[in-house]
Each structure stands twice: as structure tokens, then as C-alpha cells.
Length: 112
Length: 115
Image 1: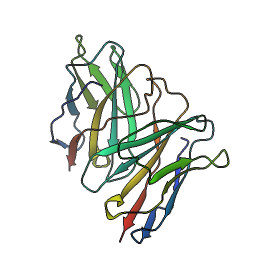
Image 2: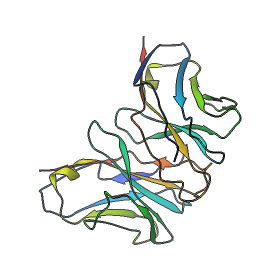
Image 3: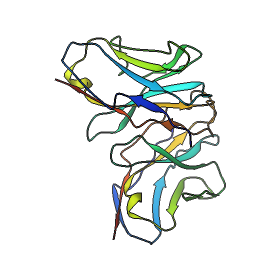
């Protein structure tokens, strides 16, 4: 499975966009990029995923570079409740894809 | 949104005792998982379960651990003889398929403390 690299921590002002980067330079063609977050030791929560194209849902946007070696999760208007650890995970397109490999993630602190 | 339910939220046990952690996955889901997170560490995969069989397990999931789906709704994790190092938050998760684009739903966890 492809490895991911994320900054350890980031700060964001409340109401501003939070842009969380992730490098996955060894990603293969059938692997998806997933983002989950974990708020204060609760269960991880799915945010968004993508394969090649940019994606948007009610929570966030995901921008994947054309070469797929990196991506950015965008929370358009961060709130204090978005303070969490954000995990970028690469999942294979076939096989036992429920086995998520979590890294240390990025701790996002949203400040008033 | 549907939820994965885990009970109890906290479990305290003595070293060497057996514990059973319970999970009720989302009703139409077919794939079930246990993960754990030791305080301050990463979330770690333990085991995946489908069609009443273990699909994959990590090296953490040794002979002291077992899983079963006894009645078609509950999904349990049993630790036969708990050790101090089993103290962790245990998360259950489920999904409808194992396709890559299917998201996992996680429960809120059971905090296990082994004394």
C-alpha cells in the first residue's frame, strides 16, 4: 500500500479555509485517496475520497494533482468543531480494502 | 445517518480476565472490522470479518483474540486473558462492500482499561 506523508500539525483561523496537504508519491493507478478525521479520540469519521478527479461534498473538497502524487483537503470555512486529527489514507482498488492504514495524521487546531 | 453502536463505552478489567467488546454494525452491512488505538498512538487495524470468517488479521490479533457474529446483528471481539498492554480504545467499523470507494463507518469506541 502506498505511504502518505502529512504535516504533523496546522493552525487555522475560524471561518477561514483550512488546506491540509498530503503526499502520496508511490500511489498506484487503482488506489484511492481517502480522508478521515478523528475528533478527540472518537471513532474516525469519513470525510471524502477520490481517485483522479477533484471531489466536493458537504464537508470538504479534495484536490488531487494531475500526477496523483499529492492531494489537498480543503475545509472551506473551518469552525472550532473541525479541530481534529486528519488522516490521509491510500486504499487499494481491490482486495480487502477495509484494512485502513492510519498514519499519525495532521492535527488541525482551529482558533477563534 | 446510520450509526455503528459499541457497548460498553468503558470497560475496566483485571489482568488475566476475559473481556467481550460488543458492536452492532449498520444493519445492511456485510463487512466488519475491529481497530484499536493505544493512548497517544496510531489507529491500528486488528481484523476484518466477512461471511462468518476472518478475512484478514494483523500480527496484533494473536490467539488471545477472537471475533464472532453470534446472532446476525452483534459483532464481538473477545480477549481471552487480558494483558496490561491490551489497554486501548477499541473501534468497531462496518461497510456494505469491500470496494475501494466504499467508506467505513466507525463506532465511538470502547475504552478498555486493564489493571
